[in-house]
Length: 138
Length: 138
Length: 81
Length: 81
Image (tube, rainbow over all chains, first blue to last red; front, side, top):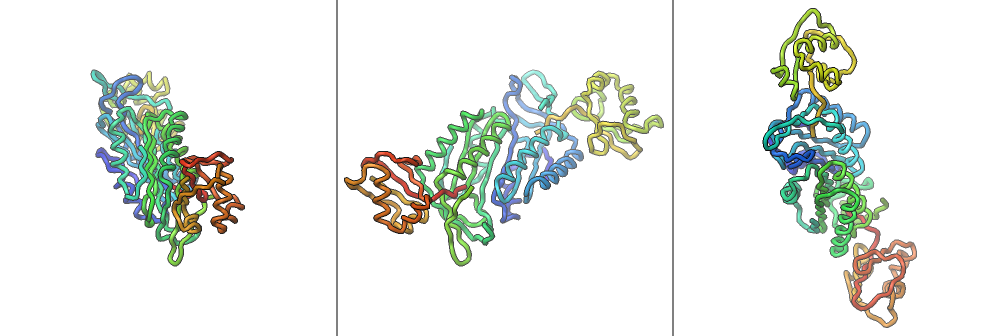
């Protein structure tokens, strides 16, 4: 399940919707990314996330397929927000559903590493008096 | 925060309570373990988890302290249930709160690996006609 | 063909997307030359290899042929998650 | 001293915990001998090294001295999470 949306979400509800389909799932690893109040030693008030939606969908689909080749995964959930997000807001949720914990841990990390590197989202950070587009070096 | 309880819990709410204390947290990795409908090729209906509560508290405290020495962790949450748990019930939640995702991923995995190996909980699995205490070989 | 711009590239083009069709543009390299002529402020980023290109939602590094139905996106390195 | 039993050990002892005090028990090894005499069905598990021991909520592998205030737990390998 892939969702690219402006709105906030409830992780418990989103995860339960998928978990309820799979009684063989014993392990769910979830990563949630948040807007931090500081970045590169600057006080952040909010960010504005630009997205290339169609490409992000394609990329997420591709990475989930790749993860399913590498690990025994029952299901996968990616929710990525865009638009204006205040400090403490969720940005992204990645959840990997599997029978055993090793598959869910490793695939969740794999998807997040990929997502940070390749997914077409761009952060514009807003400080007290100015704003700045971030460059991702890692 | 360590909780050892019979009752179910809402992960979103439990995580938000801690997240709301830390605006510098940008990364939360969570592992949730569930009762599966099958184990060792047997159809499971429920489990009964026995616990040595005082020792489990001590162990969890110790492992969180150890994780904080190894990684830059802002906070940690462990919720472990005990008693009768039906298929699809949550058994355990481990959440690691940090500024960056590497610390949260690695510490969450470290805590779960430890917990499976050393935490004083014992599973009694209930099948259609009998029940059996599990032995953990991993 | 449809061209899309993202992040601060939009501030240079003053446009999120536009239709560009020219007989001179048959492949991605020719499109790059066209775009940089149209938006000279993009040149320094192009020269520093800061610009990324996607054709029909796929990253493209080498040159490929383009036709009128293609969607080409130009953007800086990503910073999501 | 207080002795606690967990999981299927309780089915053998028919007890979750009990108070045991004897002049013969000054250390963990002496307690083990005492317990196995009291519950002969535990012996085969002890011999197969399936039993785990904790003193005051800490795993103990070697012998240590015990006194009347100690809490000793006897249980099988864990299977939590």
